[in-house]
Amino acid sequence: MPSTDNLNVWYGVLFVHKGYYRSGVFKFRMTIPDSYPNHPPSVTFMTDMFHPLVDVHGNLSISQQFPTWRPYQDYIFHVLHYMKNIFKKVVLDGLVDKHCLNKEAYRLYRTDITVFSKLAQQCAQLSITESYLFDHFPDNNLIKFSPLSEAKFDELKAQILSSNLE
Image (tube, rainbow, N blue to C red; front, top):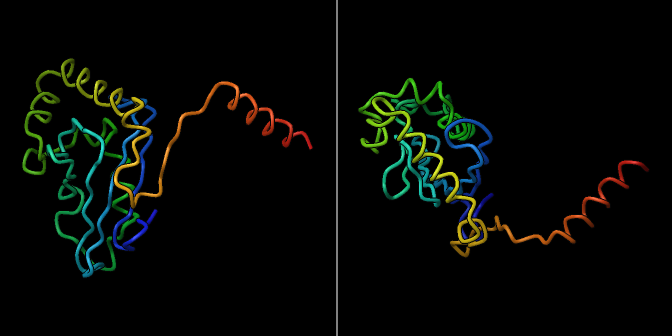
């Protein structure tokens, strides 16, 4: 979703259901340069991320999938698709050191999968804590989550179920 003040800045959320990062809810910002499609967008995760392709500031390396950006052949939806796939084992297995911004995460994935798995799962669990889910940083991000009480959930569920019966 575009930000409230700049059409070149988009916000999004990835929900990971399987694998090392299962249950993770990862917020990100995509910045589209004025020179797009001649130059690729950049992606920054706003959730702390322990991943071989993500540096300590949240910046995602897309260079393995897009070693040379090809204008009018590579598009934003390709980057979004790749972002979804970086959490899958098949992509993690195929990573090459030179494209990895987090060398420690890459090393652990290659040499100590048990520790890597624990750190990835810790990262996923942190992403679903109230402070990460309900903080609306920054203000121009229109994607907002808010707490839902059991009573309100039950009410909404009943409305949905009853509308399906009509």
